[in-house]
Image (cartoon, rainbow, N blue to C red; front, top):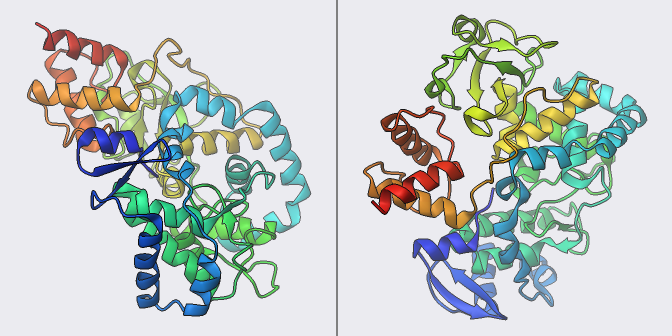
Length: 408
């Protein structure tokens, strides 16, 4: 969801200032103080309909929190190997606690499922991964965190401003006090870590007390999550997906979220579920994903997986939620081996790979260390030119090959 400051510096898009030993970047490339930014943010909030009274209460005593900027670079779903991330996300302890929560909240979860048609195990998995079942919801002042991001977040400053205004609207609505508006360093809040705009659009009062209380009411938090997944495309007739095997001669260029086929089409290409599993309904439109490239596990994913991605647009996150939900539903672990000897690329290495791809004539769409669809397309083009498996995966081996080519 968010991107790191070192990538912004590398790309040379923004100016920088050294503050408190941390290099801060603003979208305008200036060195305005936090107080000067707050004046501008208050004016923006006033223009958005926030009252002076709410602004005075929200900004009273607020100082910048530069740890917000430091943490932007280090979100585990973007920096850790996917297999390490999933292993921690679906640990035996988290599975055990999740099953306990399914039992303890079976009544409310049954009512939520009846209204929103979302698998209770998926809701509990999100709860477990986002806040360790409510034990770690974050205690940071959301206004301070978002104001810092809006002031010094570089190309994420726009996101910070949008979320700050939404957080102030939550206060304007009287849903929570300024002291109660707490969450993670990035402004995500409550049991299932809604960002403010998601709260405004999709939070619900499920326990009937007249407030949308995602901080204190498990029922409100889980129902709000179910509502968000439903509007994001969740369909009860589909599973999230299934782990699959591929034939030896499979064309890996068929993989990727942009490629969608009905299950029977994949079956015609030799795609099959791993032992003990079943393919989704034959009419379901699915995509084949390779989270660790051609040498790792393979999955067919449905629109329900894409709904989880709307919650957090990282494949590692969505797969961790899906897998944890499977384990809570007493399904088995991932069968195929992960390429444990493969070290995931860091931000600077990803940017280096993009630059080298550009040098050999395959445009990645920018040199910013962010592996998006344009970079994956460039990787596939390069792989095809070298007669490699066309999986679009930016591996260390691929980077080493590009380095050697650059030094010829």
